[in-house]
Length: 248
Image 1 (tube, rainbow, N blue to C red):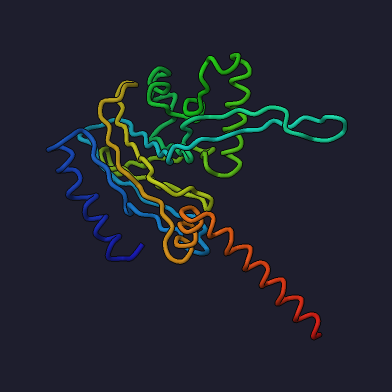
Image 2: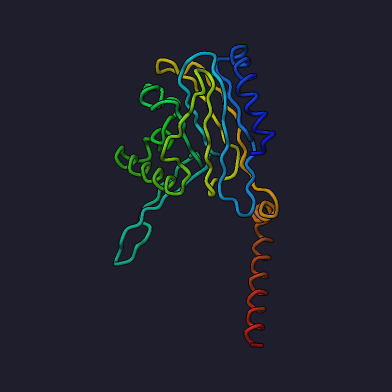
């Protein structure tokens, strides 16, 4: 982060934010950057979240990626060959999920609050009861969570929310290199006695830019032409390679 920008954020954090929190609402928060640009060689990013509360309390930060449809396949061995024997579709599943808390979640939020606010990966992936039996539903849900955690898209560890004094806080949102593009929702909750007393939601946009973005858009908007172009390019590359080796 550039020094000038870091200084400005620090100034807001230690001066303006407490005044706004007291004057407007119990909790205020903002991001150091509302746009994460994915370019060639993108290896992940970190975004600083900072804020203030009007009084003592616990803070929970929930980051949810754009919802998407996901399909899981189960492989079984049939006549000595591994084949797909079952599949399950999940509707509107977060493409990314991360959590940060000022204290252990079980110490600051009641189980009913965790379920209502979907705090924790066990509350974000749910199949309709009509789809399968209870045991089968849990099996598929756990499999999806494991797959996403393996990809780094569902954070395994809960990040700490660090308080600077009694009212100022900050945490970091870590995005892996495989993070999907789209609009993310960063929700900041203020809890007291196990209940949510205030909440704020801030958008975070993850977008491709530059040549990579142009190719991505062309491939999705003009799929037929992109396919033709890819075939022609492959043929030309093969012909060039053949001609080169033939001369050698």
